[in-house]
Length: 158
Image 1 (spheres, rainbow, N blue to C red):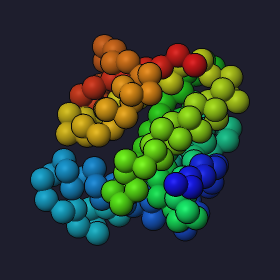
Image 2: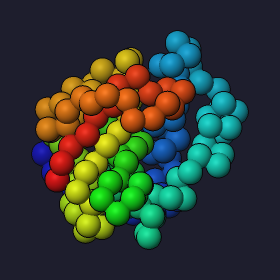
Image 3: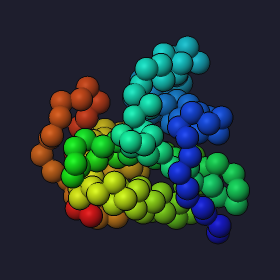
């Protein structure tokens, strides 16, 4: 198993494909049917990914044996808090340890910003994601936002 996790521009060609795959999966699960290309395009338009770059955040890509296989974003909320977002591991690479390495990379990036807390929200149907967060020390907390897709809220102190 050879994983490498490193910062990358959210708009690089490989990052853009990972984000497209991420949105395809979460939208398809939510709607209970495959998302169309037009729906994916619409979802990605003005989605705030531009905040996943310094000075407001970071974006990491995980590669498994050199192939882009995962991604995660970090968006600064304030001087001590950041939000974890767009966490995705392509299905073919799940259960290989990449999710944990991706979270470790995001936590390292957050520390470099001086962040003390990472928080996130997720949905009921994203069971694998909720399991990953719990396994790596994120604890479920009361709601801290009212996002239309937020059903579970997690936080971790760094």
